[in-house]
Image (tube, rainbow over all chains, first blue to last red; front, top):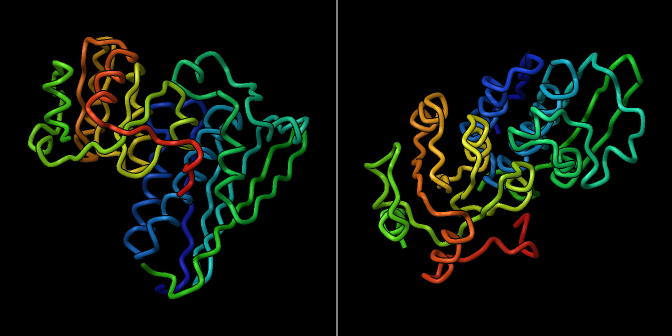
Length: 147
Length: 121
């Protein structure tokens, strides 16, 4: 791995045209850094699901990725409505997405479960009316950190 | 089976990435209109079969390095979807067949499903 790297992206609410650009940029950066394809894939899924959550639910927000020699930490921060019931929100199939989001193929209640499944660490801090911060970590495979 | 064979079998129309279709192998496929299911279960090497045509289909495929998307039910995607696929170097194909019909023909020709038990590999 090269030097530690920090990346930040702003995500706009309800913009389904540009949604995914930040995730794709992060994914391509991780590929260029030579990270294992399994790590790139997991990071891409986490970031894209989290980005879509910012677009659909969070009123927009920010994606922050910190990459060092051992891991990548991906955080999303929004000032949206917050999540009243975390246990329910992480349950597969539970959704509060709009009809429009569903028409786009989202809102099947698999976003947070997908994120959790692909993360080695998964934390949500949320307050109704204030916003939500999601923190995930992917630890690189033990050997060299490269394929 | 190559994507070129898929196009021929399903009487498909190539929307972009025509120069690549002979080189894209199709060992597996995943069919869904739910993008989170695609993100959870579509395995490396598989193509995506879907009835949705918006730009996020290409975004989703891009996240997983899916080389080609097959649109069923004759649904031709909007220009921005095709443009993004071109930028991403992805091939897009549309067939008039329904999803069940297209999947059945591909399965019959040896294209494998993405087994749920194997998901995450």
